[in-house]
Image 1 (cartoon, helix red, strand yellow):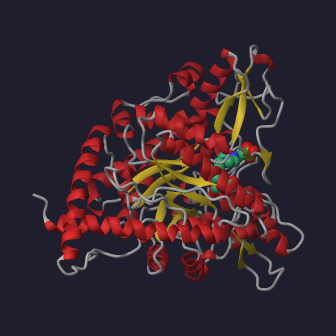
Image 2 (tube, protein in one colour; image 1 turned 60 degrees about the vertical axis):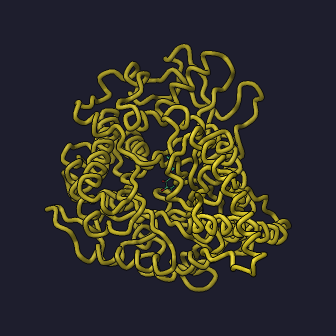
Image 3 (cartoon, helix red, strand yellow; image 1 turned 30 degrees about the vertical axis):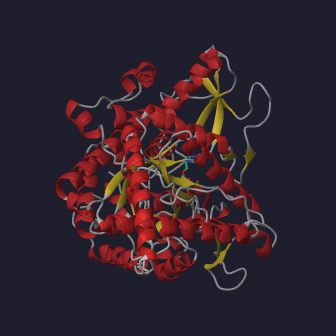
Length: 580
Ligand code: GBH
């Protein structure tokens, strides 16, 4: 017997689906003209925007220093001041939250400043915690869900062995992520954050881009803390994995009642073989092992890729058995930061290779930006020379993750493009390239989904122009322009770019597809997206739903005939209001 509640619910679904069709036609009419070429997504797909603490907050509230403050101070007074001011988010968070809410933001990726929150002796800084309570409050009361990252590069200076600025070669901080102690310090920090701020936060990431910190901060010395050591680079990567794993284990043990999902942000370009030759294909696979496998393999498989072990030998640290168990499975979803792609070609004689590998020795492949076949560049260069616009690379990296890491739920946690400031404000705000970039990359994500990748959401980087690390204010990734010096009026004033309006229509759910009535599980919200339904079960549910639907229709017709029962008692909200 089918209960009558069930029937009413089903009728509600039918009614809502048809209401949605109307809403759709309406939106299509509204948005079909103009620059955009919108991509449609399942209703549960989450759209959001990202930022990080050091890049936006500034040091308001007398924030203690991080390695990034020390590092950019070394680069000169201008950089020091840029960092000190950020985009003034520490003061302006409430109006920024309002601006986001007005733009339809429902998911906001932000990071916490570790130096604001913890002292060297392990005690918590109350003002820091109050500040983030206020930020979360301002967001939540406007319907914006914070997705919180514990660490986005701003290591407290107190983690360093030396408090003084070391030589250029030694960078600004010795120790820190190289030392085992930091793993415990990080766990203590995570504990304080989970206990004081954990209630109500649904999505966490522990560390943003361990690879960038290890390579750029400790290998190449181009990011804070400016170390140049191949041993340190691999050790830092190792310690970040251990710190991440401990924080996740702690949450699962002590804070699981808060029901949050945790991950780590892994950045990966797509590495395409420069030709079809088996050598180039092999070289690209090895390069991809380092690009993503370095961090994703320990997490999903329990150890570094075999190709890295073979090449790096004793440079690559070993996990103890206990660590292996802790690291493996230490995420609830895959958080991918993706911006660009490049080609890789095999180099037969490594002595001829101009590029150094992770071991500091010339490596058996070379990165190129031109295909061997077509001699064409991989994609148009953005403002940053490392960023080439290659939408198909996103599709490939998503399918690679699906295949290699057992089909996880994937959140695209960062993707974006920078465009230089132009002549006047009107020109700068007219960022058609970004509009096209967003549609193209979303199109690629959608294509990967059609091919089976379980992509659950997409965060554009960044909501605002912000302090782009060593590049300071010069590189602009924002959907919103920040007038740092008040060229056009007030200093720090925000001006929406064309891309904000464009991306808003995704965030507002205007390009959500109608859920298929036969689908085993209509995913209404991001939370639903993490539930797996196997295909056999899907078939059974499909059959059941079809049957129930027939019964429901007969019941409805009879009821209507019998004198007008109000059919839609169910929650009449537009389905999409709970989706994004
Ligand atoms: C993101 O990383 C960061 O998470 C974010 O904070 C930042 O604002 C955003 O990029 C834009 O840059 O100097 O030529 O050697 C993306 C991954 C890895 C891309 C390091 C740039 C350095 C290139 N990044 N990479 S280069």
